[in-house]
Image (tube, rainbow, N blue to C red):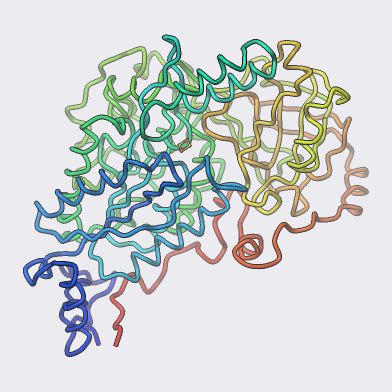
Length: 582
Ligand code: FES
């Protein structure tokens, strides 16, 4: 039995979980102490609060490659503050390495994180993340475990450079690949660009998904100011890590939990930042997943409402001109939040122990071309629009800040691809009957159909159109898109095609209408014909018949609910307890 029966989420004495672990009676306590001492620690260490460092370092995830160094800095801070740091690994999801898509494994990593926090004798935890999916996975696990926690990223890459030209991963990976396909650059030049685009450790440095999510952690109050933009290569990243290490010890002793930090107000602050920076549409999936675990109702339309009242003030690629290193010199995410303060819940509590407004008191903006004043925004509204209509009854999203303005109200003929395989097989065929006015439609690439809702929503422009100089056209799917991508791209159509959504009923030649100013996505096919197609519709063959893939398909929710598993939503009434082992 635990020496401390009052060790529950509701009743949280100072470092109660590690106390219970080390002070159990007889063989249990004896074993816990003896085996911990086997690592070279002594009785004095065992008196301290145990702080877990949940590390997503992996050599199969280049973006998280500096996290060993970051972990050492966190440990220094923890020791300085009287804590006892113990580092442990969790699944690491690297965008570039994982197939079929890292999103398929986000929920698996979230389960790993939650259960390791729950099962180990920890009093608090620092979660080290960097690449896209490692961030929401760790946060989802941490909010479900609900032990005092701070998120800490490894930081963005420095600006890429080729021949004096600033490059961004991976916006320019796509741009130059299109130019190669169009024949405007040589293979030699393409390879030289490849050598200069990723020239330091860190995550992609445009305002893609990793930059967006690591910045959003600041707005949520679950990360320290500086988490979003301080480059991985800058020594101030390690100074930040040390500071986080010192603070988590106090946070654990204060018993302040993620559920007290990530409130409805904090989530609204995060959406406001997302809109002001023209951030990744992936946040429109991840934030509802986090909210769902905390029992916070977050309808998709709330993103649209907040976007309408939030000016786009950060001049960041892929919507704008600059990258994270530039933003860091301009004052970082705190500079943007300071400008946004009239639109934020300034009294929201953060892991620093201060409110959002208190954190921002001394912040200054150092470059007004990067962080515009609210009164002189780049665009009067944020970058996102939620679309509805008979093609997306449960909603779809478009990042119109990164779209072609002339295409935001557009009617066109549908060119339908039935799957990702079909898309790959036909999109570059010289025989494809396609014009720049057509609308490319991809079916069966959603949470169930993908499976895992891969980042294929930015369908490639057909090669024959690329050679004519076309660089954008309307594209619609139930998939996601990389935050580093751009174009007039409608994503996350719900319900998805693979579960019988209207997207699966679209046929070649149908007329589709996109009307972003009025938030509409319409399929101009009469209801009688749609009913006939619906009666003939057949679900695609599932991609998995066993294992994790089967679990995923059986339990994954749709995009507006965050693509989480149905059984992971809501609070755990038991909370985090120390489990007796013997
Ligand atoms: Fe990891 Fe871009 S590949 S953030």
